Length: 88
Image (cartoon, rainbow, N blue to C red; front, side):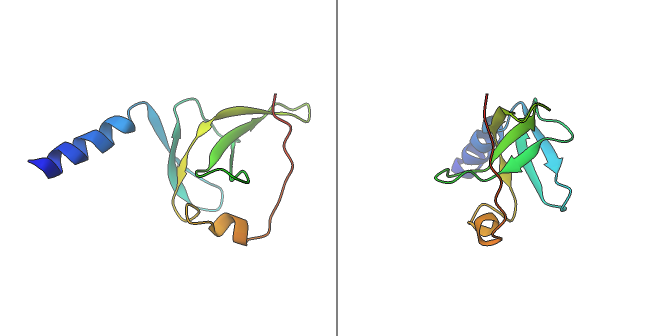
C-alpha cells in the first residue's frame, strides 16, 4: 500500500529523535541529545527551529534541528522576541 510506505518513511526519518514539551506548552520532536534547559530557537534564514544549549559562559552549543508545533509557520518571528547567541 503506497500510504503505508509513506507513513513508514516518515517514521524512519524520526528514528533516534526525542519528543519534548517547551515551558510554554508547545510540543515537538528534536535531537536525541537534547535535554531539560535547552533552547528551541528560530534562527533568521533557517527553515526549521533549532536546539541550542547554554554553555554557562555566554556561549551556546548547537544540538540539532527540531520540529515544534505552532512555530513552524513563522509564528515565533511574529512574537518580536529576539535574543543573540554566540555559537561555539
